[in-house]
Amino acid sequence: MGAGSSFTTVLLALFVLANVLHQTIGGPMIWHCQFESGMCAWNSTAEGELMWGRSSQPYGGNEEHDTGPPKAHGGDWYAYLDTKKGIPGETANLTHDMTEAKSKEACFSIWLNRHGAEIGSLTFEVELNSGDRQFMFAVEGDVGNEDWHHRKFTVPSDSAYLRMIGTKGDGPRGFIALDDLNLDEGPCVDDPLPPSYLKECGFEYGNCDLTFPESKGFKWHRKNNSNIGYDHTTLTKAGHVIALDIPDNCGSDDSCTVPPVNTTIQTKIPSIDLKGLDNSSKLCVHMWVSLIGGQGEIFIIKANNHWIFRLDDKGGLDQEWLQASHEFDSLVTLGDSLNVSVQVRTSGSPGVHVAIDDITIFNGECPSVLHECNLESGMNCGWQNEFHSDMNWVVQKGPAPTSEIGSGPNIDHTLGQSDPFGGHYLLLNSLGADQGSRATLRSDTLPKGETFCLSFWYYMNNRMSGDLTILMQDSFGAITGQYIKLWHLSGDQTGVKLTWKFGSLPVHTDAYTWLIIEGVTGRMDTGDIALDDIKITLEECTIEPPEAGLEPTPTP
Image 1 (tube, rainbow, N blue to C red):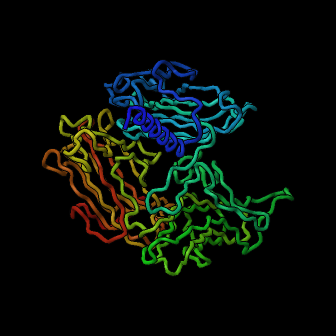
Image 2: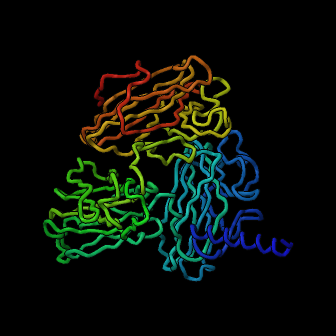
Image 3: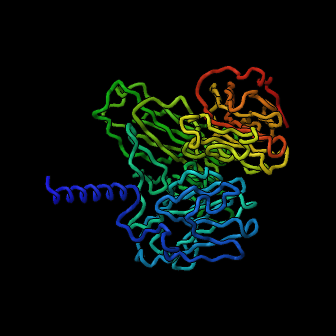
């Protein structure tokens, strides 16, 4: 092959690669920013000393707190919110003119890095030509300083400005960095389906071809900032869901109505072709559902006109996301296609709000592992920090800040010595924290009437280590404020340096339930606790270590 042919082949390969990338983002590029020679037309404004800056240094020159990224995502430079300055709650903005989008929809994508025990938040909004501001999404919380995470959203066609608002947290130990910002023509599109997946949709970039037939003047619709509150995909109010809203008491508004009793309002998933699949293989239909209000509404999922999931008692869990799933043992009974609909049968009550999110249909068994959290891809794995805690569990990579004095681990459990500086874990960092500071993790809601096993690896390697407790709360406890204490350890639990130990316990759910992992710091700077490889599976298991087991004890 000649030199010309080789050059042509390289160009063709680059062209194909560019098209693949834009299939998951948008159309042709409008602009791209890596901050290599400045702020790329982003205008920085601030109300105080907090400000946005550029850096090519590891950790943004903030090595003292080990909070920033060790390097840029793309080139040599990145932008960051300089939290060494300013006061807690202060904001600094970055604004970009949207003239180049030519009054058309565009896809904005960005790589983010967020780390630190005192991290604040970053909010994305657009200012419309009318002067109104439209919230797009916000991020907060620690996801580890080594990894960059990708986000994207569609910018409306009538946008005049795109704006990012950085807010300082409680102190300097919180770093937010930005890199590889893109604006591409056209709306954002969903990423390609993983192997064996027949349908997957979180509704962030469209309605995934679902249809919304009207019934008695009511129908489902795609929306964000819903009455449900947070969506399930992004855990933010900006995240999108498919929702059905029946208004509250209408008062004197004669045009406000509620559907009659036993009205069926449905949304349909496009027919899925099953031809070519092994008829003896299994198939799983899975989604998340949340309901607010009402008295006697019935939520049903149907497949080929037969119901496969029914929920007529949400157990008092308003604004909780509940799992809805069904596994077909084979495809024989389904024929050549799968037709799924989601229905709500009304009770005639006002003030009913229903939402679905994160639909997945795949060729295979429904997972027996509900959640598996090794932190290698961040913390969005079925657990979240509770807002009313004194501090947060943070994602740590490599040695803990207190590892040299034997309090925190040198390595994670997942990767261990195979990558001593690359593994991630959750850390309750006692460095600078008051003794007795509490941090709690809360699981997604677990279905009722099941037996689960919670397993995890923990690190408590100092006699000044604090307390680690596992609690559960069901839908009845949510009303009374009561928790059940199931498992507890305190102080040094290893006896050998650099040792992770295994913990597990069975969980029986008579009602909708969630689990809480509570850590309480020991003595300042020496009372760390770490967690890794947290897993919830549909199976029975034993209490490990046996001495951690408690007779289920209600707590106020």
